[in-house]
Image (cartoon, rainbow, N blue to C red; front, side, top):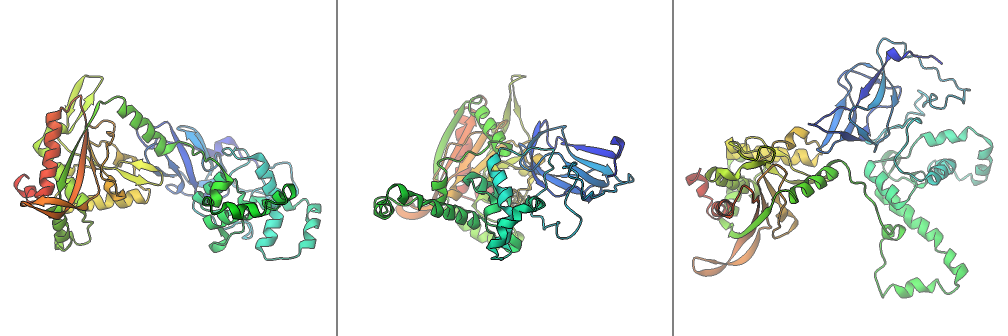
Length: 487
């Protein structure tokens, strides 16, 4: 086996992809040991306290080791991948009969060993250690893999299976991890299901969520006959109990609790909200407003040629109404400098939009939203939302916000008491827009109505200022023509 000098190997360290970040979680590996990489090629995706970020490698070479498996949280500055730089002899002998160097015999270069790699499916080296996983389950998976492979290949030669243990070469099969997407792997882990024992039904042999639930149900069915041995009358008990209470889903029966590690975006959000709630004295005010005219304007703008191809919805006009209110009351757009004991008034508006994503709540912001026309604001909102849904929001997009809107109405909620985004003095919550009886021109009529809630930092925003801002937003939404007269 060819040996390499340390000088021929470059260690790529976890960078600080944000401002002052200390750690990041490895979400996906896009390369494996033995793969050739080029300068600028993305090798992995990591999740920081702010967003998911793809990391490019800064040089050419051949991947020699992945130091951490997916799901591992790594400190900034720690080496995560070793690459033999181009120019060094990368000869790699297979050494077929050498069992001693366990880390070296990687997958053969033949097509049979290189299975299709899913997003989020990577190869972990033996020198690293995975996140908590029961040792007994891993051992059972290795022992059961030959039987599972036989079932997947459709062979019914059951008598031949006992003869397999005589061949010690069979354990090489576990190196081929079952194909499954990260959410499915997490589901299986939470339910205590070994993916190696699950029969896949997805394309190219991919294990799906339904496959995992089916495996749980099958395991429970196998365990059910054990009850009659102890209590012969037990078989009739479940049928009798059914009318008394609903039968819980299989996933509920398999585990009484599920523990979800708090890290990445969720960890940062939790820390920020606790810090904000117990640092800034929050005050929340509410107003219920008739937005029927605003809803009519939304429908008109959808037909306007200037908004062709743009996202036009009530949030667009609510955002514009808040920007108008800030222009009329600029002191609301400020922050509290604790160290200097100063109020910092911002002469620009970076408008934050709270977005719920699979990784948690994030608040990207539209830079210099105050200077944008309505079509430009619509384009920025559309880009912000689509980027957040794809999980591609950059850390810079979530920095420097001055005021935030959170739209809880999309969940059918009437209103809420939002917590300030750290470093900001105000946040506007928008409730669901619903038809309600409303006194309009002296008569009770069905009108489109919503409730707005404005939370603000009472250290720098007093009741008068907060009330003026909220009243201005409501006035614009009630009479959208004020967008012209107040602009």
